[in-house]
Amino acid sequence: MSAAKGKSAKKIAVVTGGAGFIGSHMVDLLVAGGYRVHVIDNLSGGRLANLEHHGNNPDVVVAEADIRAVKADDPLFKGVCKVFHFAGIGDVVPSIEQPAEYMDVNVQGTVRILEAARAGGADKFVYAASSSCYGMAEVPTREDHVIQPQYPYALSKNLGEQAVFHWNQVYKLPANSIRIFNAYGTRSRTSGAYGAVFGVFLRQKLAGTPFTVIGDGSQTRDFLYVTDVAAAFLAAGETELSGRVWNVGAGAPQSVNRLVELLGGAHVFIPKRPGEPDCTWADISSITADLGWRPSIAFEEGVAKVMENIDYWRNAPLWDPDSIAVATKTWFDSLSPES
Image (cartoon, rainbow, N blue to C red; front, side, top):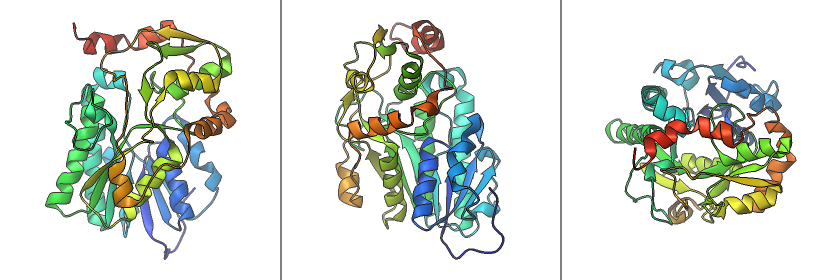
Protein backbone atom coordinates (compact mmCIF):
# COMPACT_ATOMS: atom_id res chain seq x y z
CA MET A 1 0.00 0.00 0.00
CA SER A 2 1.29 3.43 -0.82
CA ALA A 3 0.22 7.03 -0.67
CA ALA A 4 -2.11 8.21 -3.39
CA LYS A 5 -1.00 11.14 -5.53
CA GLY A 6 -2.87 14.33 -5.13
CA LYS A 7 -4.84 15.70 -2.24
CA SER A 8 -7.89 14.12 -0.71
CA ALA A 9 -10.87 16.11 0.48
CA LYS A 10 -11.54 13.50 3.11
CA LYS A 11 -10.73 14.05 6.76
CA ILE A 12 -7.41 12.54 7.76
CA ALA A 13 -6.98 10.26 10.74
CA VAL A 14 -3.65 8.90 11.95
CA VAL A 15 -3.67 5.49 13.64
CA THR A 16 -0.45 4.47 15.35
CA GLY A 17 -0.18 0.72 15.73
CA GLY A 18 -2.72 0.54 12.95
CA ALA A 19 -1.59 -2.88 11.75
CA GLY A 20 -2.03 -4.36 15.21
CA PHE A 21 -4.93 -6.00 16.97
CA ILE A 22 -7.19 -3.10 17.96
CA GLY A 23 -5.53 -0.61 15.60
CA SER A 24 -6.38 -2.58 12.46
CA HIS A 25 -10.04 -2.70 13.47
CA MET A 26 -9.84 1.06 14.10
CA VAL A 27 -8.58 1.51 10.53
CA ASP A 28 -11.54 -0.50 9.22
CA LEU A 29 -14.02 1.62 11.16
CA LEU A 30 -12.47 4.90 10.04
CA VAL A 31 -12.37 3.87 6.37
CA ALA A 32 -16.02 2.83 6.59
CA GLY A 33 -16.75 6.25 8.08
CA GLY A 34 -15.20 8.09 5.15
CA TYR A 35 -11.80 8.97 6.59
CA ARG A 36 -8.45 8.85 4.85
CA VAL A 37 -6.26 6.86 7.23
CA HIS A 38 -2.51 7.15 7.75
CA VAL A 39 -1.13 4.13 9.57
CA ILE A 40 2.14 4.23 11.50
CA ASP A 41 3.36 0.81 12.62
CA ASN A 42 6.69 -0.98 12.99
CA LEU A 43 5.04 -4.02 11.32
CA SER A 44 6.54 -6.45 13.82
CA GLY A 45 5.32 -10.03 13.66
CA GLY A 46 4.05 -9.83 10.08
CA ARG A 47 1.12 -7.68 11.12
CA LEU A 48 0.72 -6.04 7.71
CA ALA A 49 -1.54 -8.99 6.88
CA ASN A 50 -4.14 -7.40 9.16
CA LEU A 51 -4.57 -4.63 6.57
CA GLU A 52 -4.30 -6.61 3.35
CA HIS A 53 -8.06 -6.62 2.87
CA HIS A 54 -7.78 -2.90 2.04
CA GLY A 55 -5.81 -3.87 -1.06
CA ASN A 56 -4.72 -0.80 -3.01
CA ASN A 57 -7.21 1.51 -1.36
CA PRO A 58 -5.68 4.99 -1.82
CA ASP A 59 -7.35 6.09 1.42
CA VAL A 60 -5.12 3.77 3.48
CA VAL A 61 -1.47 4.83 3.66
CA VAL A 62 0.92 2.63 5.66
CA ALA A 63 4.25 3.91 6.95
CA GLU A 64 6.66 1.50 8.60
CA ALA A 65 8.21 3.39 11.50
CA ASP A 66 9.10 3.28 15.16
CA ILE A 67 7.01 5.87 17.00
CA ARG A 68 10.15 7.09 18.76
CA ALA A 69 11.49 8.20 15.37
CA VAL A 70 8.43 10.27 14.41
CA LYS A 71 9.27 13.96 14.01
CA ALA A 72 6.96 16.83 14.84
CA ASP A 73 6.82 17.83 11.17
CA ASP A 74 6.10 14.32 9.88
CA PRO A 75 4.11 14.74 6.63
CA LEU A 76 1.67 11.99 7.66
CA PHE A 77 0.31 14.40 10.26
CA LYS A 78 -0.11 17.36 7.91
CA GLY A 79 -3.73 18.49 8.05
CA VAL A 80 -4.62 15.66 10.42
CA CYS A 81 -8.04 15.69 12.03
CA LYS A 82 -7.90 12.77 14.49
CA VAL A 83 -5.02 10.84 16.03
CA PHE A 84 -5.66 7.44 17.61
CA HIS A 85 -2.59 6.26 19.49
CA PHE A 86 -2.43 2.47 19.98
CA ALA A 87 1.27 1.85 19.31
CA GLY A 88 3.39 0.59 22.18
CA ILE A 89 4.71 -2.56 23.79
CA GLY A 90 2.79 -4.79 26.17
CA ASP A 91 3.07 -7.85 28.41
CA VAL A 92 3.99 -8.15 32.05
CA VAL A 93 7.17 -10.27 32.07
CA PRO A 94 9.11 -8.38 29.37
CA SER A 95 8.31 -5.12 31.14
CA ILE A 96 9.84 -6.45 34.36
CA GLU A 97 12.93 -7.56 32.47
CA GLN A 98 13.26 -4.45 30.27
CA PRO A 99 11.70 -1.52 32.18
CA ALA A 100 13.76 1.17 30.43
CA GLU A 101 12.58 -0.04 27.02
CA TYR A 102 8.96 0.14 28.15
CA MET A 103 9.40 3.68 29.46
CA ASP A 104 11.13 4.69 26.24
CA VAL A 105 8.49 3.29 23.87
CA ASN A 106 5.30 3.83 25.87
CA VAL A 107 6.18 7.22 27.35
CA GLN A 108 8.72 8.91 25.08
CA GLY A 109 7.08 7.36 22.02
CA THR A 110 3.77 8.85 23.12
CA VAL A 111 5.41 12.26 23.54
CA ARG A 112 6.69 12.05 19.95
CA ILE A 113 3.19 11.35 18.65
CA LEU A 114 1.72 14.13 20.80
CA GLU A 115 4.18 16.60 19.29
CA ALA A 116 3.38 15.48 15.76
CA ALA A 117 -0.35 15.74 16.46
CA ARG A 118 0.10 19.21 17.89
CA ALA A 119 2.17 20.40 14.93
CA GLY A 120 -0.32 18.89 12.49
CA GLY A 121 -3.25 20.72 14.07
CA ALA A 122 -5.21 17.67 15.21
CA ASP A 123 -8.62 18.45 16.64
CA LYS A 124 -8.62 15.31 18.80
CA PHE A 125 -6.02 12.91 20.18
CA VAL A 126 -7.29 9.66 21.68
CA TYR A 127 -4.92 7.57 23.78
CA ALA A 128 -5.17 3.81 24.31
CA ALA A 129 -4.59 3.49 28.05
CA SER A 130 -4.70 0.32 30.13
CA SER A 131 -6.92 -0.72 33.01
CA SER A 132 -3.78 -2.29 34.51
CA CYS A 133 -3.15 1.15 36.03
CA TYR A 134 -5.72 0.29 38.71
CA GLY A 135 -3.78 -2.71 40.02
CA MET A 136 -5.63 -4.81 42.56
CA ALA A 137 -8.75 -2.72 42.24
CA GLU A 138 -12.12 -2.67 43.93
CA VAL A 139 -14.88 -3.65 41.53
CA PRO A 140 -16.74 -2.44 39.62
CA THR A 141 -13.90 0.00 38.99
CA ARG A 142 -14.59 3.67 38.30
CA GLU A 143 -12.26 6.11 36.58
CA ASP A 144 -11.55 7.89 39.87
CA HIS A 145 -10.16 4.72 41.47
CA VAL A 146 -6.69 5.08 42.96
CA ILE A 147 -3.88 4.42 40.47
CA GLN A 148 -1.61 1.61 41.69
CA PRO A 149 0.46 -0.01 38.90
CA GLN A 150 1.86 -3.43 39.84
CA TYR A 151 4.54 -3.76 37.13
CA PRO A 152 6.44 -1.54 34.66
CA TYR A 153 4.06 -2.07 31.72
CA ALA A 154 1.17 -0.69 33.80
CA LEU A 155 3.31 2.20 35.00
CA SER A 156 4.51 3.08 31.50
CA LYS A 157 0.97 3.17 30.10
CA ASN A 158 -0.21 5.38 32.93
CA LEU A 159 2.73 7.76 32.49
CA GLY A 160 1.85 7.95 28.81
CA GLU A 161 -1.68 8.92 29.79
CA GLN A 162 -0.32 11.62 32.10
CA ALA A 163 1.70 13.02 29.20
CA VAL A 164 -1.44 13.14 27.06
CA PHE A 165 -3.32 15.19 29.64
CA HIS A 166 -0.28 17.42 30.20
CA TRP A 167 -0.29 18.26 26.48
CA ASN A 168 -4.02 18.88 26.78
CA GLN A 169 -3.46 21.25 29.69
CA VAL A 170 -0.33 23.09 28.60
CA TYR A 171 -0.58 23.06 24.80
CA LYS A 172 -4.38 22.92 24.53
CA LEU A 173 -4.25 19.79 22.40
CA PRO A 174 -7.78 18.35 22.53
CA ALA A 175 -7.31 14.87 23.96
CA ASN A 176 -9.15 12.00 25.62
CA SER A 177 -7.98 8.69 27.04
CA ILE A 178 -9.65 5.30 27.12
CA ARG A 179 -8.62 2.69 29.67
CA ILE A 180 -9.15 -0.65 27.98
CA PHE A 181 -10.05 -3.65 30.09
CA ASN A 182 -9.85 -7.14 28.51
CA ALA A 183 -10.13 -6.74 24.75
CA TYR A 184 -10.41 -9.89 22.65
CA GLY A 185 -11.35 -10.82 19.11
CA THR A 186 -9.96 -11.49 15.67
CA ARG A 187 -6.40 -10.41 14.78
CA SER A 188 -5.09 -10.51 18.32
CA ARG A 189 -1.36 -11.11 18.55
CA THR A 190 0.00 -14.53 17.64
CA SER A 191 3.66 -14.09 18.59
CA GLY A 192 5.87 -12.92 21.42
CA ALA A 193 5.74 -13.45 25.16
CA TYR A 194 3.30 -15.59 27.07
CA GLY A 195 0.28 -13.40 27.60
CA ALA A 196 -3.44 -13.03 26.94
CA VAL A 197 -5.63 -16.01 27.65
CA PHE A 198 -7.41 -16.08 24.28
CA GLY A 199 -4.27 -16.49 22.19
CA VAL A 200 -2.93 -19.18 24.51
CA PHE A 201 -6.18 -21.15 24.52
CA LEU A 202 -6.84 -20.88 20.79
CA ARG A 203 -3.45 -22.35 19.90
CA GLN A 204 -3.99 -25.12 22.44
CA LYS A 205 -7.41 -25.78 20.92
CA LEU A 206 -5.87 -26.17 17.46
CA ALA A 207 -3.19 -28.51 18.80
CA GLY A 208 -5.65 -30.59 20.81
CA THR A 209 -3.70 -29.99 24.03
CA PRO A 210 -5.29 -29.09 27.39
CA PHE A 211 -6.11 -25.49 28.18
CA THR A 212 -3.75 -24.17 30.87
CA VAL A 213 -6.13 -22.59 33.36
CA ILE A 214 -4.57 -20.32 35.97
CA GLY A 215 -5.67 -20.98 39.55
CA ASP A 216 -9.05 -22.67 39.68
CA GLY A 217 -10.50 -20.78 36.71
CA SER A 218 -13.06 -18.93 38.79
CA GLN A 219 -11.34 -15.58 38.22
CA THR A 220 -13.37 -13.25 36.03
CA ARG A 221 -12.35 -10.78 33.35
CA ASP A 222 -14.27 -7.96 31.72
CA PHE A 223 -13.91 -9.23 28.16
CA LEU A 224 -14.91 -6.77 25.43
CA TYR A 225 -15.00 -7.63 21.72
CA VAL A 226 -12.54 -5.65 19.63
CA THR A 227 -15.03 -3.92 17.32
CA ASP A 228 -16.79 -2.51 20.37
CA VAL A 229 -13.43 -1.17 21.55
CA ALA A 230 -12.87 0.55 18.19
CA ALA A 231 -16.37 2.05 18.31
CA ALA A 232 -15.60 3.55 21.73
CA PHE A 233 -12.43 5.16 20.37
CA LEU A 234 -14.29 6.64 17.42
CA ALA A 235 -16.88 8.12 19.78
CA ALA A 236 -14.09 9.57 21.94
CA GLY A 237 -12.47 11.07 18.85
CA GLU A 238 -15.61 12.63 17.42
CA THR A 239 -17.05 14.09 20.62
CA GLU A 240 -16.59 17.76 21.48
CA LEU A 241 -15.59 16.69 24.99
CA SER A 242 -11.89 16.94 25.79
CA GLY A 243 -9.61 16.19 28.72
CA ARG A 244 -11.63 13.15 29.68
CA VAL A 245 -10.78 9.58 30.62
CA TRP A 246 -13.19 6.67 30.23
CA ASN A 247 -13.18 2.99 31.09
CA VAL A 248 -14.08 0.61 28.28
CA GLY A 249 -15.25 -2.90 29.08
CA ALA A 250 -18.39 -4.95 28.70
CA GLY A 251 -19.40 -4.31 32.30
CA ALA A 252 -20.20 -8.02 32.58
CA PRO A 253 -17.22 -10.09 33.80
CA GLN A 254 -16.90 -13.68 32.55
CA SER A 255 -14.99 -16.47 34.26
CA VAL A 256 -12.09 -18.28 32.64
CA ASN A 257 -14.05 -21.48 33.28
CA ARG A 258 -16.89 -20.09 31.16
CA LEU A 259 -14.43 -19.40 28.34
CA VAL A 260 -13.15 -22.98 28.56
CA GLU A 261 -16.74 -24.22 28.41
CA LEU A 262 -17.45 -22.19 25.27
CA LEU A 263 -14.23 -23.28 23.54
CA GLY A 264 -14.67 -26.92 24.55
CA GLY A 265 -11.79 -29.16 25.55
CA ALA A 266 -9.77 -30.63 28.39
CA HIS A 267 -7.92 -28.41 30.82
CA VAL A 268 -5.21 -28.46 33.48
CA PHE A 269 -4.65 -26.02 36.32
CA ILE A 270 -1.44 -24.04 36.80
CA PRO A 271 -0.38 -21.79 39.71
CA LYS A 272 -2.09 -18.47 40.24
CA ARG A 273 0.13 -15.50 39.42
CA PRO A 274 0.94 -12.71 41.91
CA GLY A 275 -0.24 -9.18 41.17
CA GLU A 276 -3.27 -10.33 39.18
CA PRO A 277 -6.76 -9.45 40.44
CA ASP A 278 -9.43 -12.11 40.90
CA CYS A 279 -11.84 -9.90 38.98
CA THR A 280 -11.63 -7.07 36.47
CA TRP A 281 -14.87 -5.20 36.04
CA ALA A 282 -15.21 -1.82 34.35
CA ASP A 283 -17.77 0.66 35.54
CA ILE A 284 -18.82 1.98 32.12
CA SER A 285 -21.54 4.34 33.30
CA SER A 286 -19.39 7.38 32.46
CA ILE A 287 -18.74 6.60 28.79
CA THR A 288 -22.32 5.47 28.33
CA ALA A 289 -23.63 8.74 29.74
CA ASP A 290 -21.11 11.00 27.99
CA LEU A 291 -20.84 9.38 24.57
CA GLY A 292 -23.85 7.10 24.32
CA TRP A 293 -21.49 4.16 23.78
CA ARG A 294 -22.37 0.69 25.01
CA PRO A 295 -21.13 -2.78 24.08
CA SER A 296 -23.03 -4.55 21.32
CA ILE A 297 -21.34 -7.98 21.06
CA ALA A 298 -22.32 -10.53 23.72
CA PHE A 299 -19.51 -12.73 25.05
CA GLU A 300 -20.91 -15.89 23.49
CA GLU A 301 -21.24 -14.16 20.12
CA GLY A 302 -17.71 -12.81 20.32
CA VAL A 303 -16.22 -16.19 21.17
CA ALA A 304 -18.09 -17.69 18.21
CA LYS A 305 -16.62 -15.03 15.90
CA VAL A 306 -13.14 -15.86 17.13
CA MET A 307 -13.72 -19.58 16.64
CA GLU A 308 -14.77 -18.94 13.04
CA ASN A 309 -11.31 -17.46 12.49
CA ILE A 310 -9.29 -19.83 14.68
CA ASP A 311 -6.81 -20.70 11.91
CA TYR A 312 -5.31 -17.22 12.44
CA TRP A 313 -3.63 -18.62 15.59
CA ARG A 314 -2.25 -21.79 13.96
CA ASN A 315 1.34 -20.51 14.02
CA ALA A 316 1.13 -18.95 17.47
CA PRO A 317 3.37 -20.28 20.26
CA LEU A 318 2.06 -23.48 21.84
CA TRP A 319 2.26 -23.23 25.63
CA ASP A 320 2.16 -25.99 28.23
CA PRO A 321 2.60 -25.91 32.03
CA ASP A 322 6.38 -26.36 31.85
CA SER A 323 7.03 -23.66 29.25
CA ILE A 324 4.67 -21.28 31.05
CA ALA A 325 6.55 -21.86 34.32
CA VAL A 326 9.82 -20.92 32.63
CA ALA A 327 8.31 -17.88 30.88
CA THR A 328 6.71 -16.51 34.06
CA LYS A 329 9.56 -17.16 36.51
CA THR A 330 10.51 -13.48 36.51
CA TRP A 331 6.88 -12.62 37.21
CA PHE A 332 6.79 -14.83 40.31
CA ASP A 333 10.27 -13.77 41.46
CA SER A 334 9.49 -10.06 41.21
CA LEU A 335 5.84 -9.79 42.21
CA SER A 336 5.42 -12.45 44.90
CA PRO A 337 4.79 -10.80 48.31
CA GLU A 338 7.69 -12.71 49.88
CA SER A 339 10.18 -11.73 47.15
